Image 1: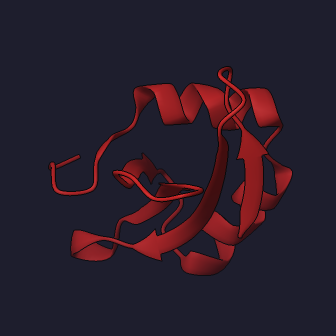
Image 2: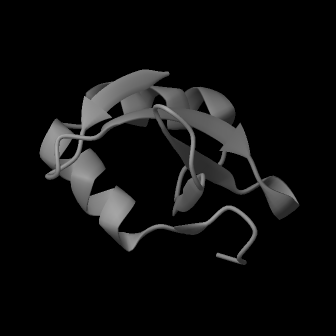
Length: 75
């Protein structure tokens, strides 16, 4: 799990979760509540996805957040 700040200075938590059919996703949750979002990762295992998350720069996290979908939407 990591924290980062978006371009509007809102703080987000991001974590790896397993989605449908073994797809790994990043789950973005805004501090203070609000709609969670998700983005698919190409990694096939939770360990690989965690390693990818650990290596992402904040700019990459912001880009992935911008490209993400609401939690209840399909990827």
